[in-house]
Every structure is written in C-alpha cells, then in structure tokens.
Length: 123
Picture (cartoon, rainbow, N blue to C red):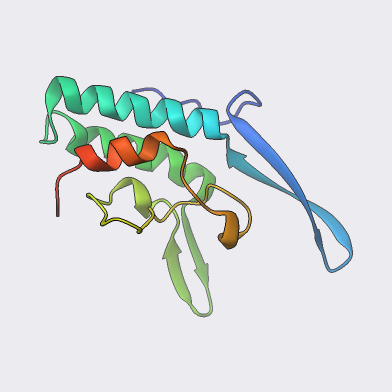
C-alpha cells in the first residue's frame, strides 16, 4: 500500500483563531480516511488479520500517518497521535485515537470506520 504523504487532494485545511492570530491546521480529508479504511478492509477480506494481512498493512498506514501527526513530546510526556492505526477492535462508543477534526468535540471517524472496526480482531 503506497500512501501519498502530502497533496491537496488528500488534505483538508482548517483555519482557527489562536490568541487573536489566524492559524491553519492540516488533516487527512474524510474522503482520504475513507479510502484508507476501505483499502484496509479489502486487505482483511483478501488476506485476513494475520501477519500477511491487516497486521502488516496497519503498520504501513501507521508509518505514513506518523509523518503527519506522529509522536509529540512535551514537558508533560509523549503522545503517539498515530496509535489509532494499531488499535484492535474497539468497544461500542469508543473511537480510535486519531485526529479526524481540529477540535476534540468534533473528532469522529468517517462512517466507514464502523464497518472497519467490526472486522478487526479483539486484542
């Protein structure tokens, strides 16, 4: 799976005010997230969730996403914002640890994610 790093077709740009200054955030677009989830679902259907299927493909997606929004280190500790690509099936009501939107209150995966999550192994 070859995921392009940065191009305007796969990116959404959001603007927001921060201390009176206009700032811009870059995020994978919902359409791009959906295409990646569909590709992972196709891999699961064709090759399963083992080392020849999802278990390997998820690391490829993780590495590409980490270039965008990977490990961040601050005085309070480190956070791996790409970890959501490595998570196994999540229980109902729980969402993957990824940034789909700028603000946490709006952060929800695209609708296809529910089907993808249902295909994942439980831990």
